[in-house]
Structures are given as C-alpha cells and as structure tokens.
Image (tube, rainbow, N blue to C red; front, side, top):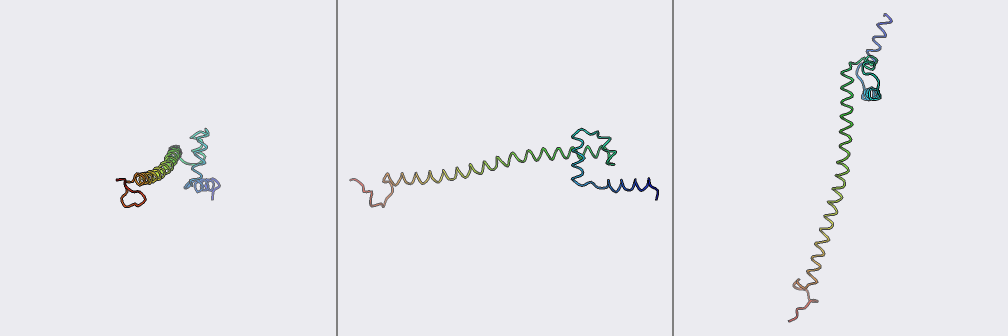
Length: 115
C-alpha cells in the first residue's frame, strides 16, 4: 500500500467517532484561543462540527451552574419546612397546656370550680 494512503487511513481511523473526552479537549483548546480552522484541519472535522461541540459544551456548563442554585435553595426550603412543622407542634402543645391551666378542661379533679 502507498505510504500516503496508509497515512490517510490512519488519520481517518483516528478521527472516526470522538469520545466525550476528546471533544472536551478540542473545545477547551478552542476556548483557550486556538484557531477554529487550524484545529478543524488537525482533527479532521468541519469547523461547523467543532462549533457545535463548543455550543453544547457551553450550554451544558450553563445548565449545570443553574441546577446547583436550586439544589441549595431546595435544601434550605426543606430545612425551613421541618422547622415550621416543629414550631406548629410546639404551639399546639402550648395552647393545650394553657387551656388545661385555665381550667377549661372538664373532668380534672385538681382544678375545682369555685361556686
């Protein structure tokens, strides 16, 4: 086989399908300032494909940053809901104690009516 054909085959098989890791590395190179056209030629993919990878990478990063904020807020909401539930139970118990101490509970012999 001709040497040039072998080199071309090697590059083609090397290009093939890119793993997520290789795509990430290519995108990071773009974000660091490498020329789109030069990287496209080196990797053997079109500039449009590289641009698409970059857009997906950035969209994923943005979505990931957004999803972290609600998680922290959700944890805080759950903590506060638990606190509200606990305070409501304490409030009900205190109201019951107050009612018993005022003598409004019938059938308690230690609290006699004055008559």
